[in-house]
Image 1 (cartoon, rainbow, N blue to C red):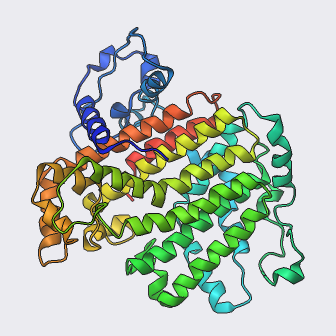
Image 2 (image 1 turned 45 degrees about the vertical axis):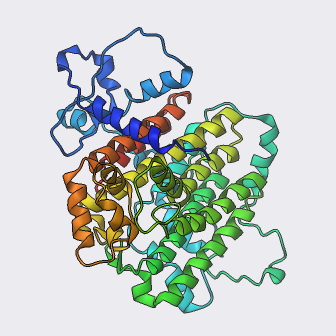
Length: 460
């Protein structure tokens, strides 16, 4: 998995910031351009509004990818345009509403246990209303890629994957895995979108299971006290039971994954679980060498982005790729789905790290400012560090001394670290949209584009 070096990341963020500062009179934008307004015009940053420059041009593009990125910058929706009534509102959730309606119920059926305490702990995070971003993306990608070219060789694997998602491969007497909740047929099988296969719906559920398991484990590691506006599982049940519940979710996700009977998809999602652990180990250090008094370098951002891919973008990117594979899509479509998920996942985490500095805990549904308290140096601080060397010693000792957290936060707020982080998130969002520019036009494709926009607009 290749990521930009620190230098190119910094240059990209700076160029995005520069682009965002250029203004253009509204009279120069034609009706078509209004429908395909650029990111800077269509995303409200919470600061003084200055749209990106947008002019018609006949300048020859250097490559097809450059052209796609350029177009992507011009097709994302913006809260400002929608507020004026210039642009229609797109609701990604509405596009796959029938599938999402049954998501939580089906996940709870996968999690049934004959042990009452385990049953309660395993289903605990399914009680609160989560964002369900990852399964929503999987379902949208499933619909969007259903219109893309297919590969005949993949059709047999696709048929096998959808034929028996609730049927075990081994005798039940051998498995010794009693699930009292699994007796009823999955509700989504009874009422479905014909463009989304049963295996793709199950993939969406597996994706949420893996994500929820990571939340259970992360909350123990981070000593969290709240999740989704309620007491965290470790606070409710204790660390041991929260860890075991997370392990149980991963076990049930692995069983459901195996029953898809698609080797490449199994490999993809299995490596996600390994990536989550590897990313957590990388997060134990703020820099690759973990020096006591580190100096800022380009490698610092590279290390951060690699960790971010492993902890966040891996699940989104590989589940998008798996969705296309389960639909029998051709190689180009499968690769495009992966690139969309990778770039969207990176943008999502960059915004998440930015919100830790800019939004209250009540709005987030979890403690704000937690990253510094945990000793973590994320993108806003890393960008600030480049121009404020004082942060190096704070990073080296992981903000452990009295006053370190407050001082680090003050320095970040005095710098352009938050603006640089937003600019880099915008660049990744544009690359996500560029990746699917070749998909046939559809509601689902529009929904995927809107997900990139909502990633930048979100406040929690």
